[in-house]
Picture 1 (tube, rainbow, N blue to C red):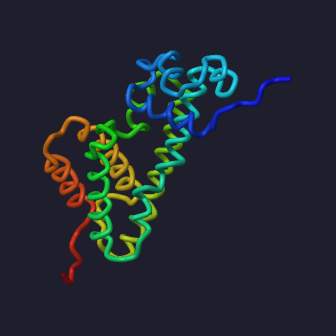
Picture 2 (cartoon, rainbow, N blue to C red; picture 1 turned 90 degrees about the vertical axis):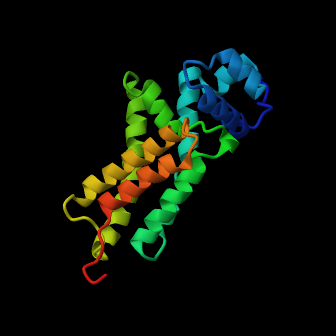
Picture 3 (cartoon, rainbow, N blue to C red; picture 1 turned 45 degrees about the vertical axis):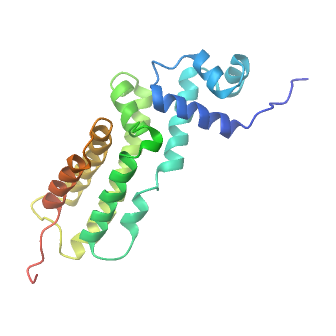
Length: 200
């Protein structure tokens, strides 16, 4: 009879995610994962499969844990400009937080490291990106109805621009020492997206 697993799989997955997030896929070895999670190599393989399969599980885990962390702000009621400003402020707070050693966004990091040559990971990240785009699209549609959107670009184009801005902020924050660098990016993004109402 096989021995029952004597560890919390979610807790182990979180530890593996923490390691992959900090070091990336290539620089993380199986031995690193064994030492960081405290689970024997054989048990890791039996439970999670090989390193690639474990990494994909960590990618999904990150998505499930953090997908609504900031985007819920976009669903709040109020003036679209104020909501988007609050969204950017919170995003910068997270990106520049020293609690996670400014590791960036795990999804964006993975896209840069593996997205161009791993088709499975690439398709997974594309699905996450489309989900982000949908959050922005829904917000921008409401802003359009309020008459505060730059009509020179489509809502879809603006949503994709915001996805790119969001990823770029996390990349910048990994090395930027001055918060104003990120704030300037957001300021320009706001100027691209929003226009003043005619009666303002």
